Length: 236
Image 1 (cartoon, rainbow, N blue to C red):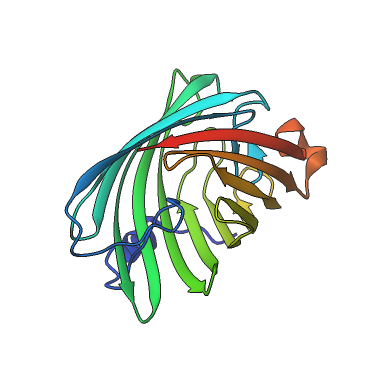
Image 2: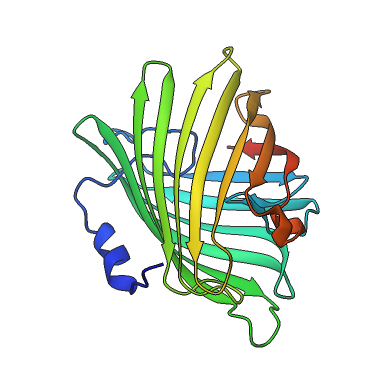
């Protein structure tokens, strides 16, 4: 893969058309909405990211507090339990900008991650950059995402992830979605990852998710094996 520095990713942060919704289920920014805090807590049977497991296929918990400003900027602090590089907790500080233009929604962000208590010799901190383009087609919403780190966590060096997602309602409370992505990385295997499943809104603040995750490199170890993952999210 082509190595790159921080500069291309930082350039994304300066795009004037950046915007709309991290993975906050397609929430839309409105300049008339005052700034506010939001909170998320949740748990799942496996911590899956980009098709692979970060928790050794074991259950995990996560949480987040986010400030959303009225001009589209946001900042958040997050934690999640993992089992990687000798660490069991990963934390993250993130800042980004949401905006809408040309009939599209955009979201760009930069985040810094730390793995608490990682084994010496494994990178325990990394910068990551994310850029989303979101478009609705009636009841169907789509998202194109690019993520990049110039030097990843653990033994992984530079990596890039590109994915597409399609989501649509089955009922007022039930949504189906599918995601397909490709990860290319230095000092770690390249692979294609995917997931498909449904999310059910139990209440206005609580949702349940059941999803099948997979990759095309199952032979590389259990973290890349296919798995059915159930999770619960409380957001307020």
